[in-house]
Length: 285
Image (cartoon, rainbow, N blue to C red; front, side, top):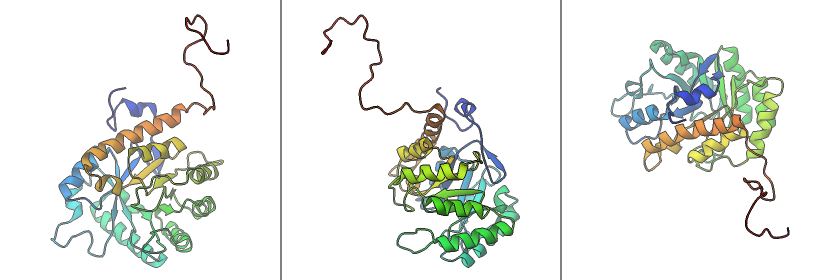
């Protein structure tokens, strides 16, 4: 395998990711914040191979202080926009922002108009999710016809409650947003995958937040995650464009390694070549 493009032969070894009623070839979702400038963001989105990009909805409707609109630098005919409710600390605010995002994307006729990446945060220091507000907003948005991709903690029971509330995907944090610590609790992620996929193996679980580098992405996929969402890991890398390429390759490598199945871990060595016919002395024989 030499080609690693999003639509290349590597992806012929995998099935598409189905989430929120859409079928996606790339299992990597990337954000659009924190880049040095919009041209760098454009190049990194392209290099990542992502088909879905997430955009924070703001009161100024995505227009910055210089009058530039982020969406002027995004090919909305190419990408599905996933509006997110970053910065919301109550269910009420999150629902309001989700509806604003739907209104904007409806005007653009973008397929992400009925999607929302739901974040209801508990406090500004940790950016950990508020479980009560998250459940409340999930129920209201699902009832309003949204496909809710829900950011959550790595608590398995909370993940079950969010799925039961009708979320199209549960998105447990690998570690706190923007922390770059990777997957801090792989056992919890494994439990979430087991619980949410019991009797429903295609239910999508997407690891969201905390990714620092490519190996973090591969680890999430090797645990069995269906997708990974990240932003800061690319945008704040010393060379963002190179890291975008790395994340793309890590997505494919981690996913293929999961599908291939790792060998069991053993305490003792297991020689690759047979012992029969060796010329040298073997201790103990």
